Image (cartoon, rainbow, N blue to C red; front, side, top):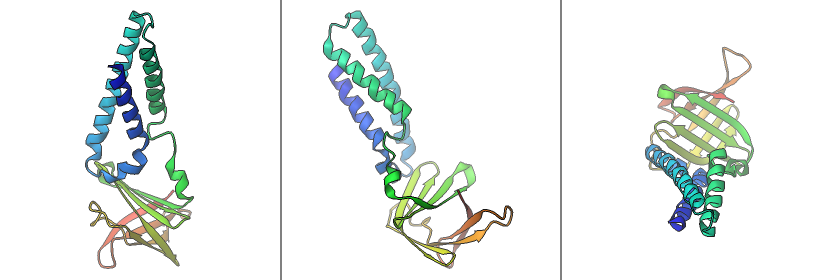
Amino acid sequence: MPKRLLLFTLLYFSIVHTSHFWSGELSVFFLPVFLFLVISYIVLIVSLFIQIYKSIKEQFYNRFRSQVIEIMFLLLFLTFIFPEGIIDFSKYEGADILVATYEGVANCIDTITVRDNGLAKSKNVCFGITEDEGQYSFINDTIYLSYKESIFSKERTYKFGIIRRNTFTKNEDNLIIFNNKKRFSWNDLFNT
C-alpha cells in the first residue's frame, strides 16, 4: 500500500508542477481536471494521516512507511505552498513589454501578453483556460498578432490591436483589439 501511495503522490506532484505546459490546452476540460486534482489532493492528505496513524501504532517499526510519510509530507506541502509549480516558467519566456487584460461577462478574463523576444500570448479564462501563442509586430500605434492554429481558438483569436490614450484617466493606454478588418471586438484591454 505505501508503495502505490508513494507512486500516486509522485505522479500527482509531477502533474501539478508541470501544469504551465498543459493547462492552456484543456479548454473546457480544465474545470473537471482541476476538480479531479483537488479531490486527489484531499485523498492524499487523508492517506497521509492514515499512514501517520499506522506508523505511530507500529511505533515507527516499518522504515519504508516512515520514508513514504516524509516524502508525501514534503511533496504535499510544496504543492500547498506553490500550487502553480515550484518553477515559474513564464520568467524564462522573456520580459513583458505589454500586458493587457479585459474582464468580461461572468468574470471571464482575456489577457494578451507581448514579450521582448517576439512572443505574443493570448489567454482566455472562462469556464476553462484557452491559451494561444504566436508572434507580433508593431507598426506605429498598431500591433499585429499572428497565432499558431488551434482547434479551440479559431473564432476568438485576435488579429491586430490599436493603442489609444484612455479618455478617462489620461495616463493609461487602452489596447483596442480586432478579430479582423471587417469584424471587430470593441473590448478595451487595459495595460497593466
